[in-house]
Image 1 (cartoon, rainbow, N blue to C red):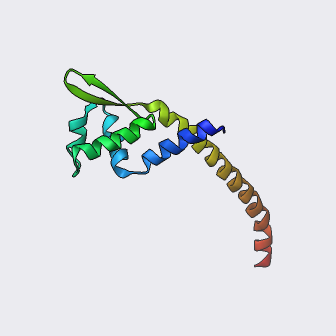
Image 2 (image 1 turned 135 degrees about the horizontal axis):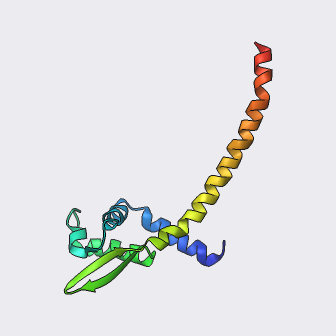
Image 3 (image 1 turned 180 degrees about the horizontal axis):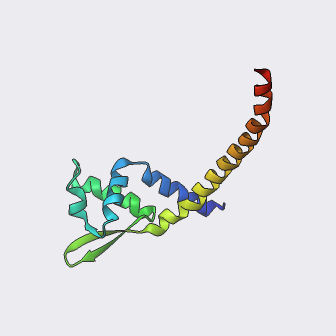
Length: 116
């Protein structure tokens, strides 16, 4: 993985590390939402929500645009797609280790039964 890819992963995982930001992303899975509507369910100021949105925007997870007088946010799922190959690589490595462990355990089974 090149340095640029690692930096993008760092930004995405950092953005996802906060529960408020994850909740914002979940809300955006239903479609575009205005900044004020995103801030409504949270017990924090609108500027605090804007800072969370800025982190998501910097990570490439959210885009902002104007719709009339409203500032709207939109989920940008391509950035989430960038973490899938990395997660798959980790999962594949663990699956390979479990497969090797299964082979070892299977080879040990006759020995255990013979000891009884």
